[in-house]
Image (cartoon, rainbow, N blue to C red; front, side, top):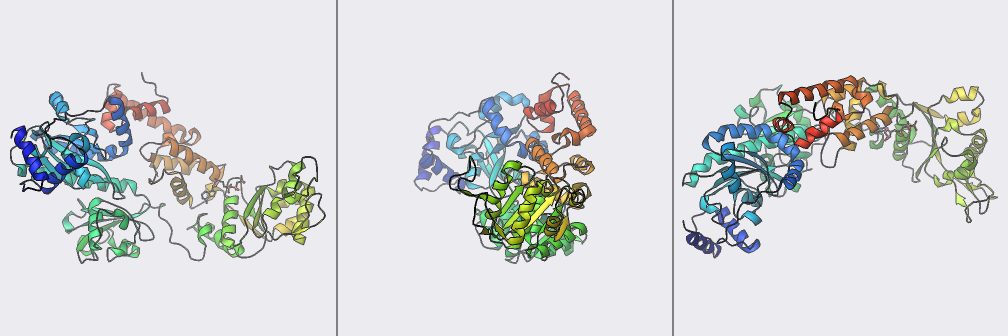
Length: 622
Ligand SMILES: Nc1ncnc2c1ncn2[C@@H]1O[C@H](COP(=O)(O)OP(=O)(O)OP(=O)(O)O)[C@@H](O)[C@H]1O
């Protein structure tokens, strides 16, 4: 076909004339003319991004590249014999991964079938990647389907890859430099890319889903376990937490919704779409024969299903209605902690003073806040660290002062912390460190329920609930004459003892909570088995504070969404980190010391290898 004929055909189609082309081709031609103002008579040579820009795009897509790699290699294995080139592009259409015949590098680069090629429709005109991004569907752009003559020798077939929230995140493309004349020759190519995209989405969903059930489904029982059609992640409340694209389409269809609006599906109860609740999931595991695991969608479609439980320790416990939500945040699902929380629940509803005992960092303030939240008190929670206020200022800080009560006093006077906590909770941390004089004053406030500011004459009514805490043994301090006995009894209407972290049976649950706290938004961090082992083995003298800090630091350092041993503070990783360094050293030696070769083998960016080497103290030349 000559350029003039090609341009004429595009103009005819644009005017609404009949065309033998697929509708998505004509729609893309229209976008090129109307939106991007491209001219089919002007050739747009392929654009390959410079190294620096490509690196940025690759770094952003690194996680996906790692997950997709084995699928891509398998696909390339199937198609390389027929001269196909394989490209993985990001959602901007930039090729961030490439498999092609190295002997043809020059021709492939020229044609844009290469790493760093920009296949955005607005730049390259009608092309498979661009049209796939625009429509969200798998398609083939064959020879003269392309917009201008630059790409008309090519035949390109692309399938979209969606993330677990239903957003298009990448495109998988296989292309031929020269192809048979008939477009139908590419039907098999389309099936292949679509199947690979589906498997990449499944792998991605499994990698992203740590704390939820995963329900895989297929239309026939034979393929359910080996090659399911789609999968949905379901949280403990029975809501859809993630899905592959096929699942998104199936769910949308069952409720007669538009599959292009994943927000209508995500977060909704699974029972809106399937005849299923979260309680049915345990009966759909592989413990039962496949043929019996049948369920129906709301539109009557029958499906074979396979439910996969979240790994032990990551399961969120069945909510215990007896313990309010605020207190359930503390932990539980294990006898010792549940008993503690049940007691805290009963105390929260009273005005009784509570004293919390526990080593430093065991969560005394955390629990005090939870008790306050569960108490329904309308006033604020005010925390006072009795060990941190200088003695000279303590009285004014706690009880306030009248105008001009002392040099440097606020001219209008100031409310003390006790009064600030009126109708709420006053949390007195490290109460054992309170000077004796202040203890006397505090005792009076508690007994009389009024506070007299320093230098004031008018006492003010206060109603506060007091929770105190100490990591020191107050009874011993009383025996030593360093703590007032009468205050001790007033604060100790009830006592709760918090166990040290090393004794907590809900340790794994706490780790998961802190992982969730420090996960970057929209992504769950996971932890490698060896790193988890190291966490379990540590004695945790700093308790939850130390664990919280360790996970926060590891979350900032880790790569690929998984905390490894090397990401943990040295005192935790200890000798184990050495063996990981050894592994890296051995792998590097196996690649003849070539960092790029190792990066290719592991499917990561070169900078990642350099970073790991630096962190493990492996110098470049070693
Ligand atoms: N159940 C929990 N879940 C998540 N984080 C927690 C939990 N309990 C405590 N933490 C975290 O651990 C850290 C220490 O908790 P907190 O300050 O309550 O301990 P503490 O016993 O009052 O310490 P100290 O004796 O030193 O005053 C805080 O960062 C807190 O957020």
